[in-house]
Length: 257
Ligand SMILES: [Mn+2]
Image 1 (cartoon, rainbow, N blue to C red):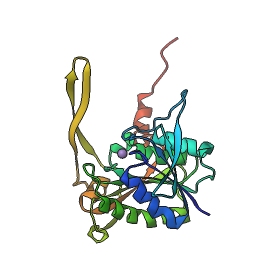
Image 2 (cartoon, helix red, strand yellow):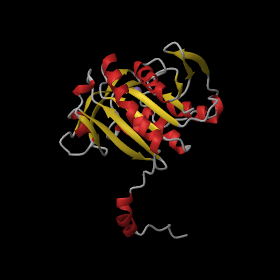
Image 3 (cartoon, rainbow, N blue to C red):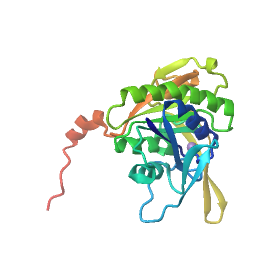
């Protein structure tokens, strides 16, 4: 029996993870292992040198669920280290509340959970709904419908080592309002954060929704802006290969002894 772990970064009780877990059920045995509380923008944080509490419950009345007092990467690490009985055939992360495109990938706990899976040799897909402001259940349902055939293909074909699929779904309430799937690369976003002095010695990061260059053909932001589902293959290797030759020319040396 195919074993599927579903996780997210919005917390085990977010609407997106329930939609995703339910959509995965035709493919195998579904087990949810997700943060107990919202861990959005936690990146690839893992919790070391301290206790991690967890509890067992059920989602949608009968999907076995572990709520972990940790990060999304913690959830996958714990699951693979034995908190979940069966070794999973795939890890599916999401459906995130809000897109994970362009530079978002480095902040995203949703994507980090998928990367934690491939570090351990388990294929993984991250799903995000490009709508941050509301929990529209119809939109999550459409995104979950999109997820099913994609996960099916990954189960059938596998993925190359250290490679995940990062999927972003435009916010539509009917499947027929999507124009199709586009294979994309990471685009560029322009964050518009600012600092707010809340009190003496107390600040907060706030911001307008990020702008994006949606005109650059073939990027994730380009596709989602045009109501295409964006599928980006993402590799864990962050080496800037295209800079290697130039860096070589610097001829970096140790200081003289
Ligand atoms: Mn999130």
